[in-house]
Every structure is written in structure tokens, then in C-alpha cells.
Length: 199
Length: 148
Image (tube, rainbow over all chains, first blue to last red; front, side):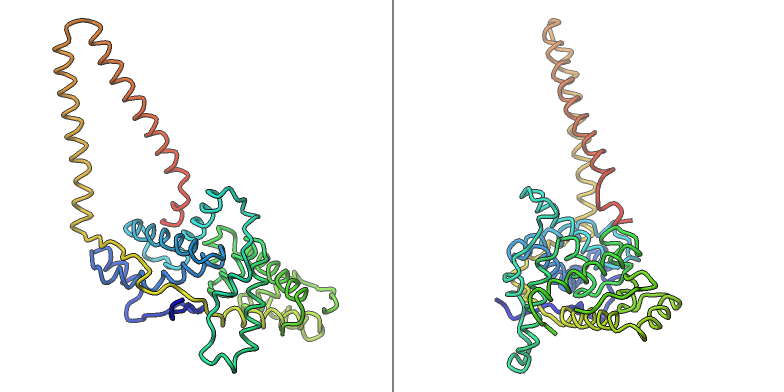
């Protein structure tokens, strides 16, 4: 396993905005395309990992999503945010993968141990041991949620997308985002209570 | 587990309250309710705590060398590609057209002409089939909305 990591906050190389980078990439500047890829591909990978629970599958999906990202760059509306667009592509790629394997969306459970095993220890693991155990418990519980509930939890409570962005990714009204998210959070709470005290 | 409460609002508003997405009126209603409802206060604390846990998590991600280098696509290469395909297609149509015309002229009897007509008809039908599939796929492309 490598030393790089993806936290909930998107790594920000604030020297150039996504919009500027898209303009530069469209005009053929390879560096801008490379910066865009580096900025967003880890988020795509982690979302795929959270939906699939398997590192190899997640890498395949993230690579395909990035390829799609760049092949459609010319027609992308630069006024929109890149992350929700890329996450929509990732979500569709994940569903395509399930379809190819003849799994129904409701069957999209992932291996909780495998997902929790992909968590990275904090900089001070001894001091943070209890917190890390808690994180593992929570992600094991997240893995047991249905794919519909899991995706909305990870989009909001890990990737920190706004309700508007979530509504764009999932193609549902903003009001539905809140109710679906709340239902998912309550189910997650119930799963955690089944698993014993955690907070 | 906390006791359920008789809420006077849609329970989903609690998630909106935690996320700070409610309009002022709804936020005030939730806030007033929370002052008197230990059950809902516990739910708010629980949701907040779990969210803090997930959002502070970090996952191992592939190192840079594990990602394939995206092929650079310069403006010149894109322009050349856009021009190249139509030119190639026009050339192929021209060559095929001239070839067919010559073959038609050189055909000695009806049978040879029928063979030519059958071949051209078959190819045309296959082309039409592919074209119709493409048009249908274009209409139902899930990325259309994303790209608008």
C-alpha cells in the first residue's frame, strides 16, 4: 500500500481554479490536464472504493471515469463544478460494472472488513487508536447499507458534497436528498447500535 | 436508544438542521423543538458524531505511478482528428462510388448487375441499422444532462 491518502476534503491546489484549468486543457496545455487529473482522480477512486469495496475494481472504474472525463472535456459546461460531474460518471461506471456482472443494484453490498481495511492510520496512531477503531466500526456499518443509502452517506458525510451537488449526481430533487439522507443516517445509526456502543 | 418523540415537523429536517441547509423558519422550528426534546437532541448529537467520524477518515489511494498517464490531446491533434475522419470518409465514398459505377458499366448481363445491387443494398441496410442504433443511444445517453 502506498503512502498517499485521500481525506474527505478535496486536495486543493488553489493556484488555478478548475475552470481555468479546463480552459487551459482545452487549449492543449498538457500540464493543466495533468493537474486536473491529479486533483480529482483520488476522489473518483475513493468513491468507487466506497461503492465497490474492492481496490482493483475501484481502480478500473476510476481510470475509466477519468478517461471519460477527458474525452468529454470539450463539451463540458465550464460553469459547473467538476467534482459532481466526475462523481456522476463514477456512479454510472459502478452501475455498469454491476450490470456486467449481472448484479442488481440492491445487491451492491460490499465487504465491510475490506473497506475498513483501506482506512489509513492517523499520523499518531497510538494516541488516535480509539478514534481509528471507531472509524472502522462506522465504515463496516456503512458497508452493510444498501447501495442507495451508502452512496448518499458517502457523498454527504465523506466527500462533503452540498445537497445541490448530491441532487445533480443522483438526479433527484433537493428535498429528496434530505429525506433520503436522513433515512440513511437513521439506518446507519441502527446498524451501529446493533454492533454495540460506539460513541 | 432514545425514546421516540411526537415531532411537530418532518423528521428529515433534523438532518437538514445538522447540515445547516434549512431556511430560517424551519431551522427555528427545529431549534425550538430541540430545547424540549431530549430524544431529538440525542439524534442530532448522534448524527453529528458519526459525520465527524466519517469525514475525518482517510483512505489509502493509488500512488501517482499506478495511474496511467492520460494521453495528451493538443488542439492540433484534436483538429487533425476532426478533419481526418471526414476526409477519409469522403475518400472512401468517392472510391466506392467510382468503383461501383465502373463495375456497373462493365457488367455484361443482368445477373452481374443484380449482384452489384444486392451487395450495395446489403451494405446500405447494415449502415442504416448502425445509424439507427447510434441515434437511439445518443438520445438515451446518461451523460447528456451532465454535459449541458
